[in-house]
Amino acid sequence: MTMMTETRTAAVAHSGLFSRIVAGLTERYTQYAAYRKCVAELSALSDRELRDLGLHRSMIRSLAHEEAYRNV
Image 1 (cartoon, rainbow, N blue to C red):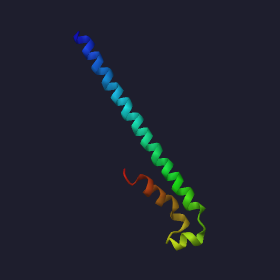
Image 2 (cartoon, one colour):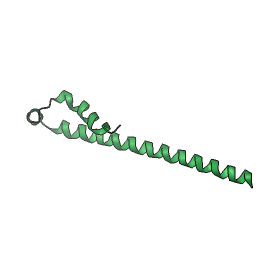
Image 3 (cartoon, rainbow, N blue to C red):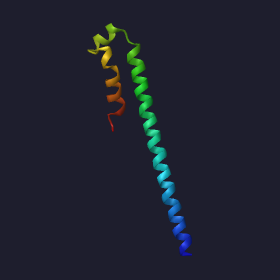
């Protein structure tokens, strides 16, 4: 009986690890998708529109990275 309890506990521990890995990968994918969306939206703006926002085209990637990964 003890052997079964230990095996069951180990299986639960592994499933918890798997869940954390999947959750981490999901979070990273969501962050990357937000980064790509932000880059695409800012890149679609004209130079004049970017200037009106106080931005330069060279700032797009760093701003998108800051926006997507600011919770990290």
